[in-house]
Amino acid sequence: MDEKTSEVNQSRQFHEVTLREFELTDVDDYFVWASDDRVSPWWRWDTFTLKEDVLAFMEKTVLPHPWMRAICLNGRPVGAIWVTHRTAEHQCCAELGYVIASQYWGRGIATEAVNLVLGTIFGDMEGLERLEALVLVQNVGSQKVLEKAGFTKEGTLKKYLIHKGKISDMVMYSFIPADN
Amino acid sequence: MDEKTSEINQSRQFHEVTLREFELTDVDDYFVWASDDRVSPWWRWDTFTNKEDVLAFMEKTVLPHPWMRAICLDGRPVGAISVTRRTAEHQCRAELGYVIASQYWGRGIATEAVNLVLGTIFGDMEGLERLEALVLVQNVRSQKVLEKAGFTKEGILKKYLIHKGKISDMTSSGIVFFCDLIYYYLDRLFEGIHELMPNDEVFFNSKLRQLDAQ
Image (cartoon, rainbow over all chains, first blue to last red; front, top):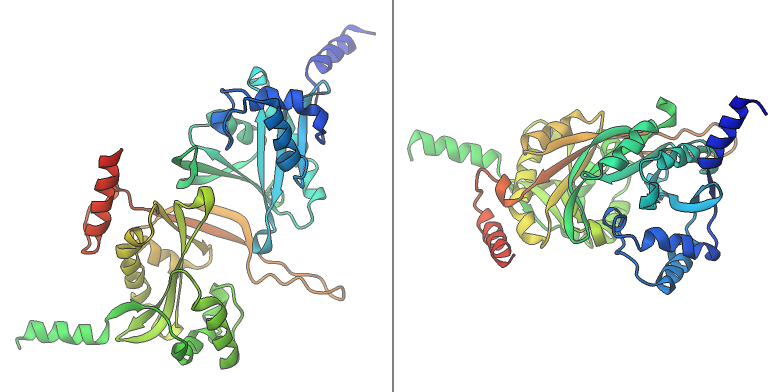
């Protein structure tokens, strides 16, 4: 094996991001970010304290979700990514969400996961023309992920929803394949 | 009566916009804009062709609506305006919609109706912080109404929804229209108000009580 292949193998060994469906046996990994106080401010749920609660959450919300994937780093779940297809006159639209364990922030993992989704979701979801993401104004890290993945910032929607009891401004991003 | 009062009376006589709840007996007036081909491209329903359908529509959709008003010109309905509250984590916001019979376009009636709503809705709807409106990119008139009423254009949401989408059967190609929409919002927080309208006192006082309680 020449030097270059060896380097490539090393980088692939330390940084291969893949997506797969969750199983209940992933509960230990899921618990890592679900119980992390650095993560919970950025998504809708409060910090989990018990694995039983995470298991129940996986049974009730994660596994039944129509399009939810574990973000795996070298085969091990370090986060989750999901796409929620909207209905009726909004069925041309779906909303993207993702979460990464804080130990893995800043390594481009979310961006890779988003790119993997972009490569597959428009084929998977019939009639999908728009993938959108709503990000808290303060969540600059997530805004950068979306911008790197090619999303367009459409505007800031003020006082758009109640997040952790506070009325929050959200930034709307979209990815339109026809424009890209 | 001096000249000025007479002029004011004349202008008031020809242009008094009020809001009230609908009744089924408004069906004839409702039919005017519901059956108008100039109106239907701009809202979600197809042009109505008979009054029975409009009556059914009023029974099913108009009268049960939690916040829907007839826009009256000198007491007669010439359009409708509604505010639809969102739920759960979105309950701080509500969506505004309105329609005016085409014979009355261009007279500022929609703008007045929107202003009447603004004067009352934040008091009516506990916890409302954001009134938003989604407008088709091509609907320049409606954008002007909102801008005049003080709404802020937040951005254009591309391919946001299917408007008058027609997915036909297998014999011909389907045509689905994807629309770009402009998102407007109006934020009526205490700090944002520069001018008090008469009905705002109720809203103001309740806001002050909220702030005191914090």
